[in-house]
Length: 111
Image (cartoon, rainbow, N blue to C red; front, side, top):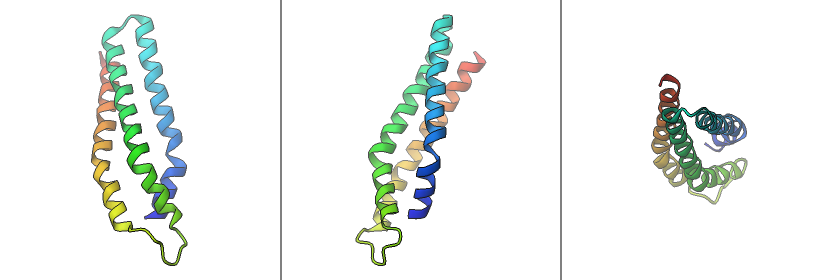
């Protein structure tokens, strides 16, 4: 699992940052244009993505770092099954938050 997490940790920050920045820019543009429904929807998306990021940084990232550090060790001194269980515990929450953020951004586009 360490290799999978290492792969994701190396490649996923760029789309994650771009998505958060794009949502924030959408909210700013909507406020500037006086489109309050769109501004609120985009603002909700930004808030959801920030919560997603906090959960990732507090729960998933430390586990990812420990799992990737164990790669190549003949006898890693970590309980990988427990760590993966803890990582899996928040993945549904993170997926729902991202789905809701996309829904909020679609609402901003369609209203």
